Amino acid sequence: MNEKQLKEKLDVLGEIIAIRENLISEKQTLLDSVIPAEIKLKMQDIEEEFEDKITQANENVKSLEDVVKAEVKNFGQSVKGELIQAVWAKPRVTWDNKGLDGFMVAHPEIKAFRKEGEPSVSIRFNKS
Image (tube, rainbow, N blue to C red; front, side):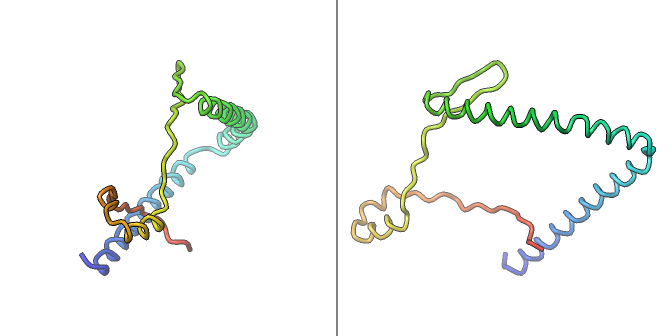
């Protein structure tokens, strides 16, 4: 497959995503049209009533999560509670690939220990 064909597929994907977004928008418009104004006002009141409470709950969760993560990190192993668990993972090892590639020129025997994974692709929207 060449670049032109790939661009065409990306354009089709973009069109399908746009159609999906329009369907979601149209659905929301229709839902909004069947909800009476007084119900919308009550829904807004409920949203406002819970907004601060939920924000505070989120802050409490974040604060305790940070404490638990730090303590489990120091503990050095995973801990499982009734509902959730904190999973400890050993530190990731990284190497200076550029430096090692240069070193490999002088010491080709280390090439046997080099492994290269598969490339990955992510789909992102172009910035407007």
